[in-house]
Image 1 (cartoon, rainbow, N blue to C red):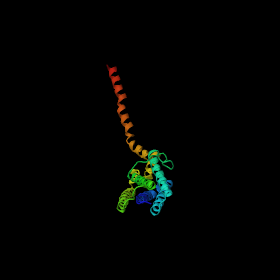
Image 2: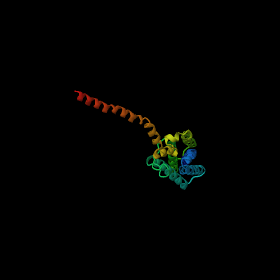
Image 3: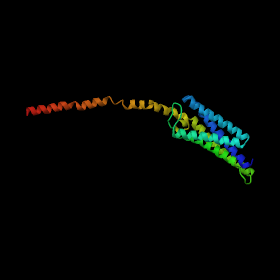
Image 4: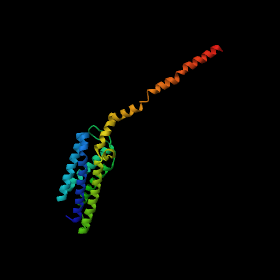
Length: 221
């Protein structure tokens, strides 16, 4: 295998491991929301981690093809949950917001796809020099490390809840869909409602009196 192809495969493997780290970080939180959502992230993390480690140690066209297909499925699932909403579970049909943690995870998956495709395509040119190889792997590795670190830290700080990192925001959406949040808002909004009829009745109560006084004045007139 040529050096450039090996470098592309290594970057793809590192990106897959990085995405697995993010999925593993948020799996417990999503499991507390609903076990099905947590299971999705556990399976995704296991698949990406297993493929990434294997791709670091060995490479063949079948392995690279599996990696491309797997990452593409996960990217597609992310797109569906951000546009059409969850297909299953308590938050079914509720679209999730697009945020930093989830976006960086998708970026890692895209890098894995591009790297695997590059390794599949190979090159007919002169193999890269050792310096270019090391430089390419180092640059790609740093990008992957930076994206993974930010995504994991954002997820651990709870940023995926509001930023659409993943299914962590579903709990809030599910509460809205059940009407729990609107109920609180409605009750607070209508707390001043009782004085309103009293004010209205007070403002309208003089009307009969006024009419009676006018009628009484006419009678005297």
